[in-house]
Image 1 (cartoon, rainbow, N blue to C red):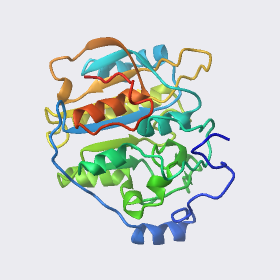
Image 2 (cartoon, helix red, strand yellow):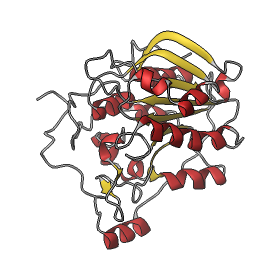
Image 3 (cartoon, helix red, strand yellow):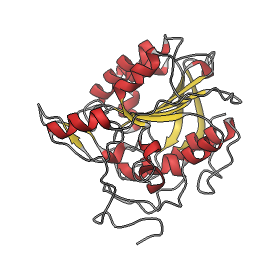
Length: 304
């Protein structure tokens, strides 16, 4: 067993795991929810938003009409790669600079001394939140199946911070892991945080459906946001990507776009530098002078 990981079959946080209908209603009414804001100016952007889809090879995603339309609104990164397989270690790596020996999808716990990007953001008083479509209530730490149709709605493995004890053992941090409805509430109130990770559910992200479904969801979600000045200022950077390819024997090159006001004037262009899931972390670190986590983020290539 590698350092920084407890057994996936062992104990893990159970503060917010209720899934029965009555228990969900009770937890939703009582679970702490926090909506922090800040206004710390960065070098290139003041708002950073990551949104991931699932398990699709580059050419399949690039050929989707809705994703190719969105590509005309920003910059396509043509040599961007996932860091491993399967899904969960990619999510873990994107916020921690390492997958910490998480090698499967499971209920991993990474030791509390392992820091993530939110430690760096908190040190500079930069607000952040993560949003999961169909998460039943704030801070939820398990998987949630749709009670009406049995579909996989929200899954723990696609929340990039949920595998870290440094996140789950802090109730104020858990309170910033919220349902996507909170994103819309905060947007309407002009109270969005500066760093965000948004995860569609298992239908919307293409995991249990197709890239066609994922592309339609992404275009429907982003089109009004990119036209909304409360969301998309000239200091907003949106990164749309996939966690990994479907083909495990490929180079793991995934379709990725940079959108938003921060790349205004570069619409419809392509960038051929070699990036990976550590690049977003590096970009955030450099933009706000956060320092680094001492992991693979140190040598990663930033977008700017």
